[in-house]
Length: 219
Image (tube, rainbow, N blue to C red):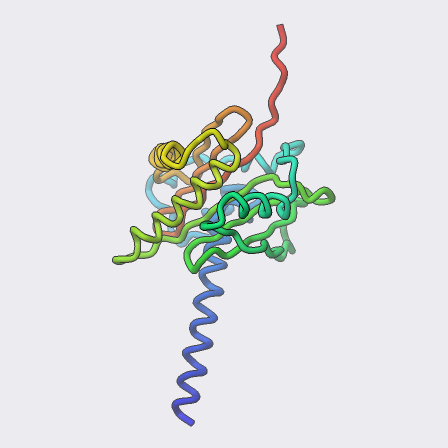
């Protein structure tokens, strides 16, 4: 009887840990916040470099922000066909009560420390932002976990920039991560794409790709 109680207790603990990891990934990512400043309210104590850092509204939340011309189902089908060794499971809708952005949120668990997430335009279901959030793993497994996260981020990058090979996409990614290191919000524009890095240190790191509305040049 005592052994059964211990087994049940361990199972409940494992379930709670998994749930906590999912919540941590969600709140670390920038996709659940109505503004990026909201993320700082969830942190116990902001890092010194963040205290004076201005937190802008995430561009995909602004009125009239563009979408990728595809639904999350269409993206996932094509992405998985191109990256069978780096699959993304079905996205699950996130409870949006209290969210005033009028966007549909969804997330997909890749592993215990890596999550994919998105924000979708209501009505059309088209993609406003695609994000990969990595929760650091202290100890000897950290390098392998980080390499896995980099592989997924680079694959997402190649999906939108197919002319890049694996080495080129990893090099671009590392440059972005280095430029955005320690910043709650860093963006870099490449043509019709916006790359975003949200680095919350030990609380996690989010890499996002979003569309940019291009304007026609006038004389």
